[in-house]
Structures are given as C-alpha cells and as structure tokens.
Image 1: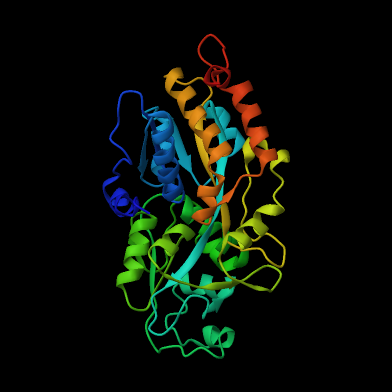
Image 2: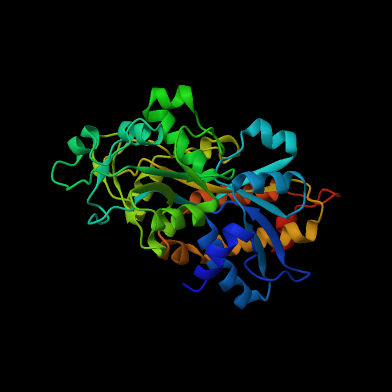
Length: 348
C-alpha cells in the first residue's frame, strides 16, 4: 500500500495526505482511520480530481480543529455526547468500524500465540504485572514459553480516540482501572512510555524488546506486528480480524442512538472482538464554507457507495447500509447553508 510512507510521517509531522489545492477538502483528527481515508482519497482524486487534505493528528486535535473551524471536518474515534454536539452546532456520523489490538514484541512469540483477558491486560497497563512470566499471564498461556523479561508498556502521548476505546474497555473489565484511571482520549497513565499516533506506538513496539502497546488493526497488519488474542465477554478466545469486529458491531443499535453515539467495547457474543470501535466525522450544521462542506459530504457519500471493498481490504468493517441511509437523512435535514438550503441536496 503506497501510503505507508506517508502514514509513518503523518503521525509525527501531521503531514497532509496530498498537497492542498484550493478546492481540496480539509479534515483533521483520528489516526485510527488514516489508512482507509488515505486509500479512499487516492481513489476519489483519480475519479473526480478533488483531493482530500487530511491531517492525522489524533482525535483530540481533530475535535479542537473543527471547534475552531480551521478544517471542514474533524475526525474522532470518541463520539461526542449529543449535548456537546448541540453546544457546538455540529452533527457526527460514523464512517467505518475497526478494532484496537494489543501488540507485543516478544522473542519466539507469533501472532495468536499469546492470549490475555481484560483483567490481566488492565493490571499490565496499571503497572502491577511487570514481567512476562508473571503467574497471571502463565495461567492463561500454559503452553507458551514466556520469557522472564520486563514488560515495557507503550501508550499514546497525544489526545487519541484509540486511547478512548482502549481505556473505555479497560474501565468496563476492571473496577480498579475505572476508579484510578478511567476512560478518555487522554488519561494519567500509571505506567509506560508515550508515543504519538498509532504510527508512533507501532514504531515503538517494533523497536522495543518486551514491549506491549495498542494500535488500530490496520497498523498492526501493515507493520507486521505480533497481535495478542483476547478472551471476550462470553469467555471465548477471539483473534482480531474483520469477522470478530463485524460480530462486535452486529449487536449495536445505531438507529436508536441520538447523534449515532454508540460505543462498541465489551459487546456480548461468542465471536465478538472486545475492543472494537467506530470512527466518526464531525461537521458543522451551518458550515463557515458551505461549498467545502458540500464537497466533504459528497466525498463521504462516495466512500459509503464505493469504498466498502477498500475498507475490507484493510480489515475495517463498512457501515451497514441501513445506517448509511440514516446518516444521509441527517445530512439532508441538518447540514445547511446560511439561507437554510440543505447542502447535501446541492452535493447531488
């Protein structure tokens, strides 16, 4: 995938996917969906000549930039609460579903060899389990040769929706994590070293013996990182892949959710990956630049219509068609120019 080079650079320099031309669409935020936005942007530019200038700076930065109206859309893996959307005069909608994956750098351990449960994972990230051959890890992995090696925890240093999904999951499976750390895009980490973006965490784990970190699955795949299987809510061991993300997404009740506010961690179901999440776009209901906002809606409409296969190739789960229909209804009724004309109708 030819965007790999930009992906590593983008996290550190917040580099745009493509040089911005006057009529390009501008967005900023989550690194979680960056691989698919890059792929969509490339195909869209070939088809329409219109580019997407997207800065992969983390969800926290994306929320700030759209609040300050410096971009046409913001991107975040932490959905905003309906009250907050109202306060800022915004709508939000999900684009794809993915999974947060624990990744490790352990000599002789391959993807799928190692499994963890939520409680043990929380204790590792709390800094309470510090060695790979700790009895708790051994008990879950009786047939794995675990080294007597110090665990190096790698976490995000920037405001991140990937962190929100991760800490939301840990808060659901560990009362201690919930009371001491909680769930947010940025938290006070009890242990470990920080890195910027999914790119930075992937890089750090790759270069640090004994490391464990968390990244969106496309980054684990692209960087050939060793993934850890998880024991889910139903007590079943599941591997991270599009089928287990799909299973987690299947029980989500999108049409009942105000502002599409749905959190997909710790979903029931034997096949569900427990640390799944959707990623969201934020756009003003009355945008400062209506023409640019109409172009952005056109781009996402194209992505919903033509981008599913590209998403699946990167192991993201496309949004169900009935949800896409709901999203397009929201665009038609909520996003308008100053005279009250729906921008989505103009985009068609």
